[in-house]
Amino acid sequence: LFILVVVRIGCQLPIPGVDADYISQWFADQNSLDFFNQLTGGSFEKMSIFALNITPYITSSIILQLLTIAIPRLEELHKDGEEGRKKISEYTRYVTIVLSLMESAAMAIGFASQGLLTGGATFTSITVCIVSMTAGSALLMWLGEQITEKGVGNGISLIIFAGIVSRLQSSCYTTSCHVCLRT
Image (cartoon, rainbow, N blue to C red; front, side):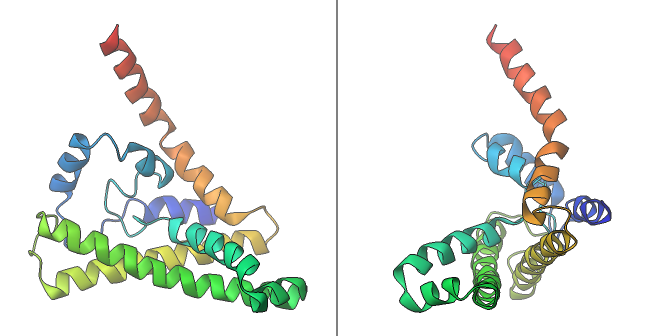
């Protein structure tokens, strides 16, 4: 429970140097990103340190599962039991960090060119965004693993669930407003 509270607090902490008014207005204009924002528990909309959420980890897990079928060495590791699965989990963590770096770089550069950063699109401000989002994603991955290790359940799923539940009231309000406007 404490870890989920930490996750919710992290979803409220904006990346240093981000123009919060600009990003709020930008999201108000973009209806297509509502689903992604729902999965991240609103952290993407606030450009918090957890803006990437756990999506790089999920993507890397899927990539490694598919590669397990295609690459014989990974298939052997998978069949080796607990030791092999630990090695695959280690590879998954490395791929998660690489994906987090790529996604955060794309987001930081893209949003900086649109005026998201208060200091402008400087090397330092973009680097701070990249490091913040990558560290946030790595922290979420670690927190999810801690929940799983304590035997509470699948930590990654619980983090996703907490994010969805946190946005439930907002989503219901938005949905009811769209229904009222159509009638």
